[in-house]
Length: 307
Image 1 (cartoon, rainbow, N blue to C red):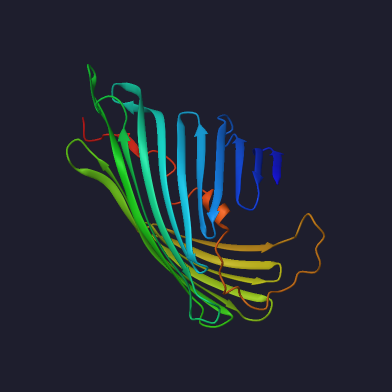
Image 2: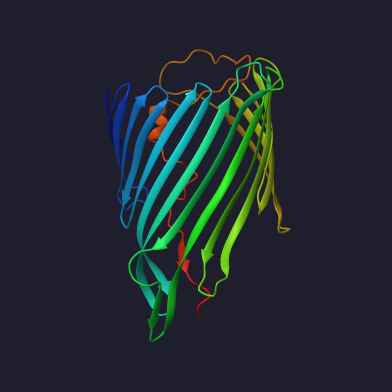
């Protein structure tokens, strides 16, 4: 099936059948620079697929290869390898100079689902790493007005997720992860940061139309708690965000009402139970998507250890 779409956000052209497909998207995300995105995916056999995601924009290009293997209907393995190349201008003490870098990224993800009725709902574990190196000339530049060097970085992290279904009308989600970025300075000292992420949430259906959801999310800088209640098309919520450095807290109240647009809709039907069964996205769709955990910008900065 061939697909064509044109809107203010860009122009999309693609083709897909049961086993393979490709897509092309031309857009202007920054309002001035045109970006081109190309994807291709193929289902090699039942539960096995491979794909590529290419993005080209001024001064930067990236290629990501994806592989998906489903040994069983409730288990999925995902491997991804990416290569990003960029040429940007950096501000050294003696002026602006263009530097080219290459960045390699790797990701491994495992997901497991359990049958409805089990206390365990799903479990996921992912690990990723990305490293940047400078292309071409020696990193340190000597200039009459000073010395300059580009410090390249390494990012790595992991994420663990666990979901439980204590009852047919409730769900508990837990997550913990770590993300760190380190830049290699000329003086041997590392300049980087680490961020531990913790999150927990619960979802409870009080009756056939009312849902209550609460959650907590914390990292190295903030703690946030929220509580939402949904009934039919109405939603109200309350959240509080607190800065860990002793700053002020922010409290937000929201209220919303959803109105279906487009096709004709009957009176909204309430869901009698939460969706405690989980499913993987189709293999073809998964192998053409770019993993969000991989950094989309080069990790490089001017070496601040050089005076």
